[in-house]
Image 1 (tube, rainbow, N blue to C red):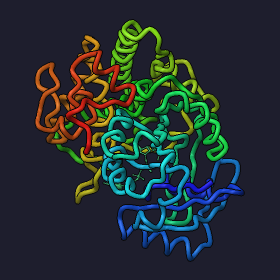
Image 2 (image 1 turned 90 degrees about the vertical axis):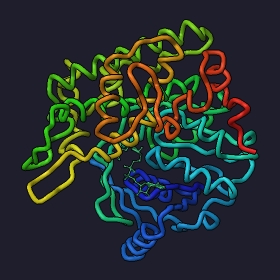
Image 3 (image 1 turned 60 degrees about the vertical axis):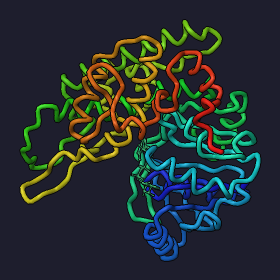
Length: 401
Ligand code: NAI
């Protein structure tokens, strides 16, 4: 199979090494930024392969092409993997769409919220022939060690969920990707399960809020541990946010009884399932975060200045997880009549720090809503329209010519 990997970060490094090491598969890498492509080409040339360090094994593979020109990587690909923060999806979908072959599979790891709607909008005339898929999360916690040639996988999830459009392709996609990624994948009924079960949208803004909600501008001597340093305030808000997602799930299950929303688990259930072998103390959500080996040493996103470290409110923990996560979920809450005071509190705090406007009072409203994947951004304001959107049908005024 010919596989194209889009992205130049931690996830793309891991995929490039793993997939190109698989016999019978060809992996190419498309990077949007020419300087990254050059750095990757230099790293690859010097070291003869991408080395992926797992805790218990090492894999080395070499992609056949590394390029910032999609024409050199995408044509003829059977599977195209977007291993990117969600804010890059739109730009990359637009760049790759002219080169896709009919029938190709295009997917995002992770999907975050509303990936299927963005794909319907940007994949053009070919969209009806394609299979669009998403993973609920990235299967690994991974960090680049040396650009273009080495990456460390700190931990792997025990199981990751996959959704697709058309829906009935999900088992085939899961089986194929399981072989490529060496991780157990479970097909689920619809993309909305992934959108709501996106735990990054809770963990990242929730922990950020817990750490810095009273921040007054002071510098830290060192960056605080993000997960292992979790405090009681953060756990409380995470549990409340997770409870609100569960209320949305219940209302959706009542509205669409034929759909299975059971994969939308509470944060506590999810973390114990996903990091089964990695958590020392599974007794509470706090202990699951603080004693999870995959999170060892991971610090809060900070910027260094002359005095020390300041929280980085432009980090993807907010710029990805608010507009492509929490706002999407908040939009679905509005459609299903669920009140979300904890989620709203975090969004209000985050949008002020980010200098954005997504929510006003208790309504989704603001100049920056257009740069999110909330269903309302696609003109969807009722459950009936949401049902069509779940089938990949955008309101007609949203369709690209
Ligand atoms: P990263 O921050 O390492 O990747 C950034 C890369 O994305 C850049 O190097 C660039 O190649 C590309 N990119 C950024 N902005 C772009 C734009 N506007 N247009 C085109 N390309 C652009 O991210 P990483 O770690 O690879 O993560 C990818 C996804 O996986 C993200 O959604 C992240 O939240 C998620 N994730 C990552 C985990 C990890 O351990 N690395 C764990 C769980 C989820």
